[in-house]
Image (cartoon, rainbow, N blue to C red):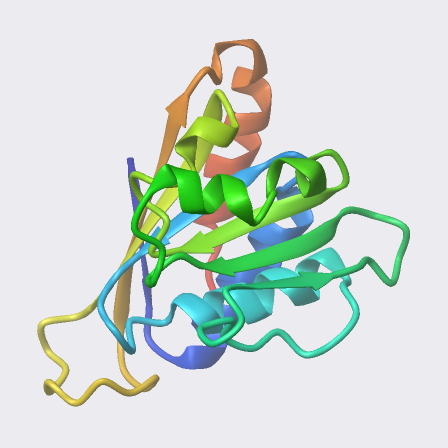
Length: 170
């Protein structure tokens, strides 16, 4: 597990941009964290790193947004699983179809989307304890990243992710 601290929304987006350049079609990222922890801000940066079309906004009211690539790379499927109560409901929105050509980011997806793949990246975003309790996008965040599942065959790629996370964020 690796922890990255971001001090501003811009740094959270930059972390997303960097990871957006690392991910590949079929990758699944499961984001957890309280309201205002920066999940959508991170995903906005990830979309920029991937070079997807359209503004990346919270899919809370539509459950899922698909952003095709503007550069010929993988697209982005952005899911808000907060209102989903079972894996059956995840199956109903047919995310597996999109995995062959897109990266899946599931906010609030823990325990719901892991059955779609044999490996995924978990990101837990937390507001730093030095920030007041107002759920906004400002202030420091601690972001814990963990590679879960069958990554043994792709250790080199995970090493590249660890290197990417060591760099300073502007």
